Amino acid sequence: QKEVEQNSGPLSVPEGAIASLNCTYSDRGSQSFFWYRQYSGKSPELIMFIYSNGDKEDGRFTAQLNKASQYVSLLIRDSQPSDSATYLCALWRSGGSNYKLTFGKGTLLTVNP
Amino acid sequence: IAGITQAPTSQILAAGRRMTLRCTQDMRHNAMYWYRQDLGLGLRLIHYSNTAGTTGKGEVPDGYSVSRANTDDFPLTLASAVPSQTSVYFCASSPTPGTGELFFGEGSRLTVL
Image (cartoon, rainbow over all chains, first blue to last red):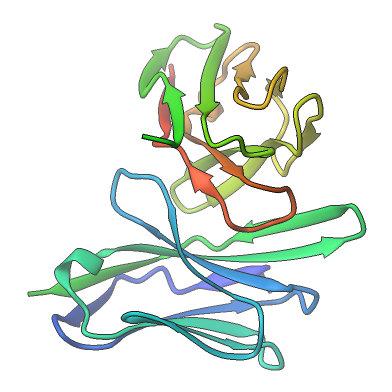
């Protein structure tokens, strides 16, 4: 199993719907989880992070983490065309003085007006 | 505007030539990173620096070198460019090392012919 797996998409949802983006991972030692948004031709920008099991909400975005099942998801409520982008999942773990941040390949989301 | 500045934005380079990609940040972040992003492969860490004066190898360091003479600057050098180094290169920073909360520059698109 790859370290971080995301469905490459494209995931297409109508405007106003809930978009659900999923990420599974193989390293049970992963400690922190991040969602980055990357518009076409632009650089990634951090939109959410989550450390603990459960849900974390920030405006229209909700990150969900289930460490037992090794998945993290991002829900976008009331999706807007401006949410159309590639969403990257990233996992962080530390080991003594070393740490590792691993990115998934991303899921392309298209929100249709 | 505070942030990360990369230069050049885009460059076409003949194989065998030496090239330095520049990265400067004005956020006084301790840690800096160089990633490359390729279609189907996602973001991969080339080199990193936890603080001025120190550097480390990432996932794909071969063919690249970095230096960190001061807090603000983190140049990436390709000593003898090869076509497989055609990619989009992102410089990133974080306030402290060992975090997944990265701030990215706008990227440098490099084509090696």
